[in-house]
Image (cartoon, rainbow, N blue to C red; front, top):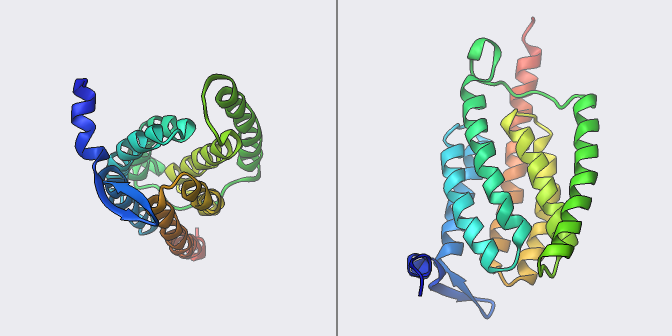
Length: 213
């Protein structure tokens, strides 16, 4: 057994059994840090970023061991985006002040649409050609939706919540199919938190827009 395997023994150890499938401590760690992270995003607390990085590490290991290779690799990108988002939230506004909530512009939507279509097609080809993924299309589209939503989150674009909701609607049955039941339940909770975040950010945006320039 390699050193990495020894380190990961607690991570892969069974915490409990749900719906006939064993739930590992790694999945529990992903559940706790993920729920806390999304709640902190919803209330616009910058601590969501370091908590999110812990969540990314947990899910990177969990998804790789479950054959969700795109979702696993996505966690590395998330970590890089989290570092940028942490800085942007604190210093990305005018004159390096805190970043306010804003709307996605038509030009930005065009860029997101092109990136989404091309990214999904490219990732699908990579998964089919170079991995043993059993769900290449769904793995690809959720990965790309999540990346687009994360970009919006780093810039505090209120519409990022709609992208997260779209991704979560697919993630829930996908994780159930992979017997990651605790994670599937977590993503149901994510959808509820996304609605909370959408309402909170919309309220902040409307308050800012109501202030005379």
